[in-house]
Image 1 (cartoon, rainbow, N blue to C red):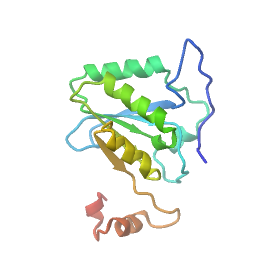
Image 2: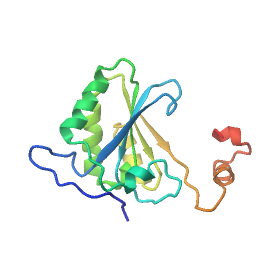
Image 3: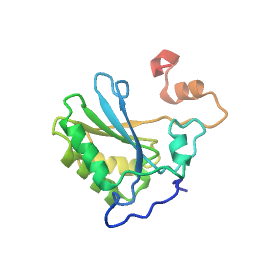
Amino acid sequence: EIHTPGLLVPTEEHAMIPIMKFADFSESFIDSPGLVSVTFNCLACNLACSGCHNRKILQDSHLAVFTEPEFVAMLDRIAESVLVDLVILSGGELTVYPMSEIVALVRLVKSRVREDQLVRIDTNGTNPEVVDRLVAMGLVDGVVMDVKVADGLSCCEEARTVLGVSSPSAVGW
């Protein structure tokens, strides 16, 4: 099941990027060490994690989404910025959308940002075939996967087991 907030119907005047809806973005100095990044969060996910850092935007049915012209204008501002090194497409979960729409989105982003600005997707890892295709097509410069743990279990303990490390510092805690 894909969790999406209330759907907005695009008009001719305010078209939206296929069905992908982005209603949040942020700048970061810590998402990729040594790089300044801008993250766009899509409003769909195939999980409902209790500890999700974007749970608020995924559950808010009154959020306005960026129209395609607004999204393109933001990308153009990013391209003009000498500070931004990386554009991150995150979620929610980007890979729940149809492949053709993901490809169209990533191509749009790549066409608007500077050649030296990287494009990365952050994923929960539930659709590895989509990630594999994006990488094989050379559309993304990187992929980051969030390790998910079952509700009620110790996040640190399970993540250490999954990652095969013994110390909390090895996974950033």
